[in-house]
Image (tube, rainbow, N blue to C red; front, side, top):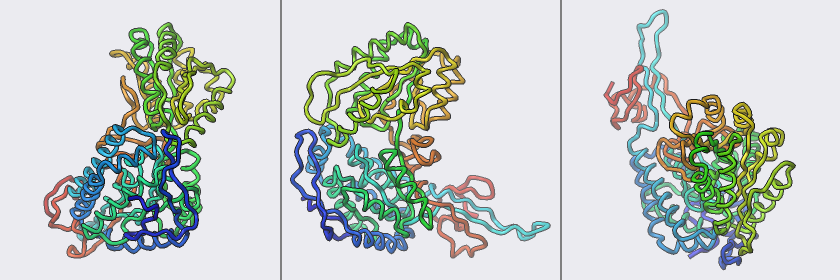
Length: 527
């Protein structure tokens, strides 16, 4: 049952005077449940509870936190088909996508549980004392990662489960020992409340402190702003637009105590088509990319919005096949009328740019909130001279840049803004002939794909889901995989502390049996 209330710790609350409803984009009607926006008092109460909970939660063992994370997964699973139905009614996404995203969400929670249970993630480092060292004695220093404090997580519009209430940011922060306050996304607030209820049940079952998790509703920006500016919030996680992420980043930087904002924002995910690959299989590549561009109405952060190649007969064949194939695909529903409207606005702006040509676009009538896909092309020089063409059009839109030669290809790549992914389409051994362009691409992205499509993000320790700005606000960190826990911690050293007063991770006897760097050597042995 959806109450439309906020979770302030383990209590439901609806003190605010502003209400709103979520929207079913497939049926083009409002959903029946009303949602109450959090008041300023509720924002303050949630943060105060989180700050108090941090004192206890940050000291809870990895084993106990792991039990909590696994129980969250169990409780989400126990919500059953009702969660899937609400998910689809608030997003327009099909049941199969809902099942898949739920599975990813459960998998993330359980992966973090395993990660912190093993304990090695704290990166313990010990340099023992040398009191007789000359000319000065060496002190005993022991370092490990410790939690930052209360974290605010903003739910993402395009992943109501995996990047939202109990998604990757929340799972990573809880694993690190940070209480979480979620600013629920207004487009799927009902889904958010159901998942929040599962987190609260799990917290109570496993004896976590009240305030370890809260869920706040808001249809506008006020609640999010208040959370980021609150002095007891210590970090922020965000997935969304460049405009939204940058606004939060600026707010956090202007605080008396600036805090980190780990924002994943815009990316057009360039695809570089090398000449021999185009000569030998242009049509096959084009068919594959027609599907990738339109997958999920282009509403993935790794959607291939830019395709780059050198003029040739192969590139011409690719362009002609892409134009033919992309219009064969039936359009699908976007997440919300606002997103569908923004797609049309941004698409129109792109199409109005001088020198841009439409290769093909779906022209038949579509249902409300369905997106008509478009493939376009432009000369390399025009692209270099018009930064507007670099902007993401969130939806099933892609631009093919036709370069005159290898030098212009490299220039186009080098002048791109930071991206989440880059893709190289190459025949065997061809990649070695284009090392400068490959190096240029590596400098602009967080992950390079070889002969594939960027759509699809594997959740595993080796995944890097981040990149130079504006793909993310800090390219040193990933938003996917267990290494994302590093966003919510800071290194902390103990100097000359008595062994019995040290955390277990740093004690001589190594009771947790974790791997540590001791005097320069990686070991799990006692000192």
